[in-house]
Structure formats: structure tokens, C-alpha cells
Amino acid sequence: MLQQCGVDSILVKHQSDLTGIDGLIIPGGESTAIRKLLVREDMLENLKELVNDGLPILGTCAGLILLVQSESLAGLDAKVVRNGFGRQKNSFEEPLELKGIDHDFNGIFIRAPYISEVGPEVEVLAKTDDGRIVAVREKNVLATAFHPELTDDSSVHELFVKSIVG
Ligand code: GLN
Image (cartoon, rainbow, N blue to C red; front, side, top):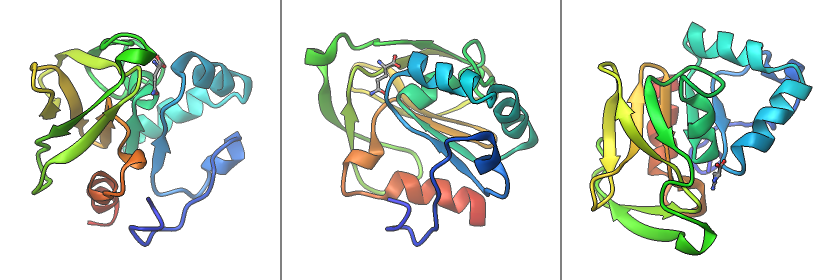
């Protein structure tokens, strides 16, 4: 996706990888497992600092969960419901109206969370048909409950890259 946006990327696996990056994507997967790895690599405090210092961050699915204040990285003033749409077999796709994107974006939800409450500084970018919040932005943090990287549509990543390069 980043290549499609014309952006160089590296994989961030260790603390030293955080040096010199202009933005960070925390991907989906399993938030408990990612959190454990962040603790093992002693990266949690560094990341919190970077979030606080204004590093542009995109979190998708498990990445969103980790970014919520009460979870690990304290970037988003929101409440999140893990596995909020149900189990693996309840995974689904839904076209979404997403603020900042001029066409429907195909939301791919895999054991996805949703956001049940947002603080005053949080901008809601998208909701599902049944009204659940699934994309938000707060200052330097952009987060989606779905997986934009599993589509061919790089609009969400472009939105993110624009927040870095203007
Ligand atoms: N259900 C996972 C969690 O709680 C997130 C799933 C995903 O990232 N696709 O971390």
C-alpha cells in the first residue's frame, strides 16, 4: 500500500527501528500478542512518547485497539469493544462512507473491534450501517476497525500519507 502511495517503508520490529521514521502503521492481527511483543522489545514507553510527540500513526483493527487510551498507547480518547462484531465467522465486508474519501470504501472487518464512545477531540470518520463507529481521527492518530490494506484501494493510506507530507 505504501509503495502504491510512493512511500518508502521499513518493518518496525525493534526499538532501534523507530529512529528516523516519519510515520508508523500499527497493523491488525491480535492486540494481546502485539502488546506482548511491544513489552518484550521494550517499545511500549517509546511508542507512547512518539504518539504524544505527534508522530503520525495509522492503526488498523488490532492497531486501533492498542491506540485507545485505556489500552496501551494512549493515543485515542475513545472506548473500544474488542471483537465487537462477533467471532471469526461473523467477519464481513461493507461499503463505507468515509470522511475525506470521495467514494465508498470497502471495509473488511475481521474479528473487528468497534468504538463505543469518543472524547470531544475525536473526529468520527466512518460508521457502519448499524451506526457503529469504525474510523476515527484524533490529532496525529488515524485509526480504522477494518483492514484497508486488504483492498486494492489505497485511499486510506493516502489520507495517512497526506497527514505526514501535507
Ligand atoms: N480481534 C483482534 C484483537 O482483539 C483484532 C483482529 C484484527 O486485527 N483483525 O486484537
